[in-house]
Image 1 (tube, helix red, strand yellow):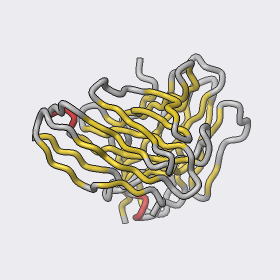
Image 2: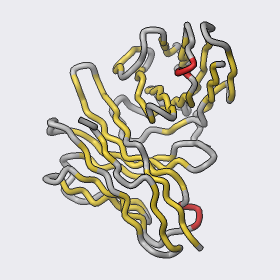
Image 3: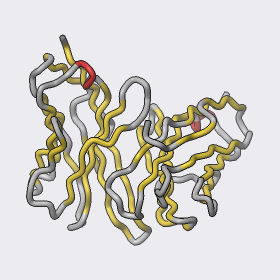
Length: 113
Length: 116
């Protein structure tokens, strides 16, 4: 158990809908990362937050957005969902912004039908 | 060009033997980091080992070592004394620091099966 929690574990929704994935980092970790793992795209870095501020952006679509709240938990919002958004979404956390050791949560499996 | 290339989709190793998982990377940065992660069938991602581009010594963590050859741009993972629990997908990854912050790139993974 990495100490990072993600909810929900599984999510099934229809195309065009909007969902919110939630992540609570390990106690004391200030940095949160979001990743997408899909069969065709593999593992992709989406976005990083540090202490409430966006610090890095990867291959995140404009339909996706994220934020980190004052209590350091983070949410990833996915809107206008398409079939291709079906994937495993991981959250990871680290103590500092450039820590090489990231602790991954168990992931949220999103299925868009 | 691919940032991270893992050319071995699947590997088999006998229990207690050593195995090397290949990884090559592409960057023009001087400062970067290389990682290996393990993903068992249960799905979680487990950090294994890290090598900084300026680290002169190869990184080691228990049975894991990273064979870092900077000139060749390779960062192979060596697992010694393989155990059945090592059966999993293994991902090589790189961190670059860009003007938009950290960027992380992952390879397509190598599926390792340890045979009793």
